[in-house]
Length: 216
Image: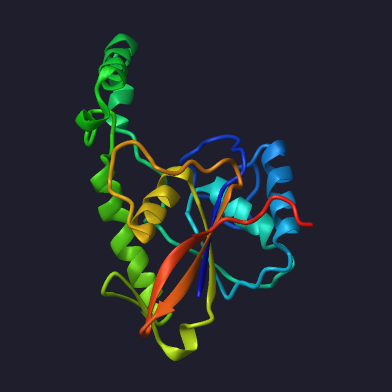
């Protein structure tokens, strides 16, 4: 089994837009080049299923990277990025800046949940359980600290296109990294994380695969 996480390319326009397909205008020219380069680098990789955030920058990245593969991209409505408190948009600018300042001046341990928006545990509850349900639909069951796939699912390869924060939540969970308000992983635009699974007594445990930058 393999999971591949890919962050979107550089965005353009409204970051919250959930467009119809095919997607246009959600990546900048640089973002399109980033996605094209990623598609070229991964052209020999096999993917059985593709998932994407509903946000345009992730979905357009998925379309570009997977161009020519003739495969469906399933939109997962729960895997959007960290959600700010939209009520703050109605505050005077000075009041908003004061809330930002207070959050930035706080210790990390004091920022599990702030007025700025969604807390870390909120994101975990929004993203992780439904993602596990999607894996279960494919025959991959979360069990005993690892995963137990049905026979047909043992060789599945799944690619997920989303955002730095939401992919970081999933990566933290899969690798057993302790929850903390400061993220443990940072995805560059079109950054890729590959998670392979190692079998021990019929249970498959995720490991982060770190590819070499050059071969010789």
